[in-house]
Length: 564
Image (cartoon, rainbow, N blue to C red):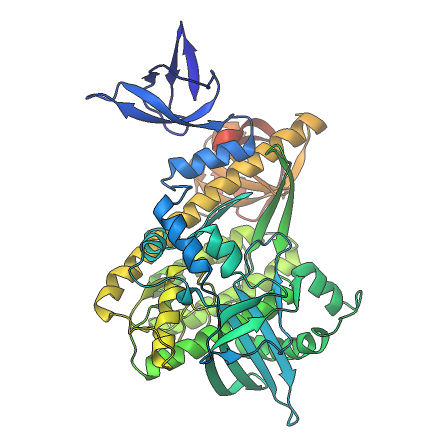
C-alpha cells in the first residue's frame, strides 16, 4: 500500500511484515492505493509501480491483491492468449466423431457458473435399465501436448476460485467459449456411455463426440422440480427423471459399501458492481448436487477401470486408508466430546482403521443432526484424521469413495490431471491422441497435488477476507454491540475458533474469565484452571465482535456468555 512520507511516496508490504520501499516517480497512483511494485537497484531499496490494483477498502481489490501476493499470475502471456484463440476456432467435427447432437442433453451447475465442462443425457430402456451419457468438454482437441497453452496449463495445474474472481487454468477463449458446453451450440466432447441395471454398470462405451446442449439448468431449479414446485419441461424432463433414478440407486450403493459420510458447506458470496461484498449464501449439498456428483463419479470410475485394465499410463486420484494411530486418536477426541464412537480392536490394521473411520463419519453425521449443531467442528476432526487425496500414476484406490479404481476425468477445463486422463483414454480407443509418456507422470502427479493444496489455501484465505468485509458492513448497519450465537469449531492454546451466522472469528483465551485456560489432552477443549469449566468443540457460545481486520481476513471476538 502506498503511504505518504513527506514529499515522497513509499510502498509498505500489505500482507506481510517487511520494510517499506521508496517509490521512484510514481504516476497515476495516490497514497492509500494498493499497487504491485517491482524493486529496482542492487539492494532493492527503491521500486517502481508496475500496476495499480485498487483500494484496501474494496473487497474485490483486496482479493485481487491476495491472489497476486500468493503467486498467481492473473494474466496469460500474449503468446498463450493468441494460441488459445487460434485453437478455439478448431471446432469442426470430423466424420470419426460420434454425432450425439440429437440426444436430449442438459447441464446442471451453480447459478453463477461461467464455464460448463460437463453435460448429461439419459433414457429409460425397455428392460428396466437406464442408459446415461456423461459428456465432458474435449479440451484435448484444442490443447495439443507441448503447445504454449499446454505448458501454461500444466504450470498452473488447476483453476483457483476465490469469491468473485477466478485464476483459470486455460485462457478465456477456451474455458468460457470453445470448451464450454453452452446451450444450442455444437461442441466437441468426450462421452462416457454407461448402461445401468440399478447401481450396477452392465455396459460401458467411450466416444469422441459432438453434442449440442438443449438447456442450462442450475441446482436450485432442479431441486424445485424434484420438490414438485416446478414442472420438468421437454426435452430434458424425462432424461432428468431417468438420471434421478440412477442417482438414487448409486447413493444407496455408496452407503451400503461404507463410503465416508462427510458433508461440507461452501460459501457463495455476492458482490456489487463496485466490488463490495453484499451477501453470503452457504451452499449445502442437495439432491441435485448429489445427482451430478454420482454420475461424475461413475464416469470417473469407468475411465479408470479401462485405463487400469489396459495398463495405460495415466494419473489416478488416490485416497489411501488412514493410519490406525490417527483413527485411535480421532475416537479418543470424539469420546471426550460426548459423540458416540464404535468399539476398537486392540491392534487395528489399515483396513480396520478405514472401516472405523467410515463408521465414525456416519455416527458424527447422526449426532450432528440430533444436536442441531457441531457439524463444522466434528467434521473437521474426522477430515484431519484422514490422509490427503493425491494424484499418482499408481492405482491405489480411493478410500473415501470406497472405489478400487478412480481418476479425475470430468473437469479438464480446470484440472490438468483430467486432461492427462482424456489423452490416455482417447489414445486407448484410437481417437487420434498420442500415447501419454509414463516417465513424466510421477512428477506430474506430485506437481498437480502440490498446486491443488496451494489453491485450497488461497481459496480459504480469500473466503476469510470476504467474510470479514461482509461482517464489517453488518456491524456498521446493526451496531458493534450486536450479540451473535455461534459454536466452537476448533481450539488451540491461544483460543477458540468460532463460527457464527456464516462468519468466523477467534475468541482469545485472554478474553475468557476463570483464570488460566489450557488445552485438554485430547486437544478438543479449553479448560479453566480455577473453575474447571470447559469450552469444547461443538459448544454453543454467545459472542460479540471486538475487532475486524477485513483486508487480512481476521476477526477477534469477546464472550458474552458460555452456554452449557
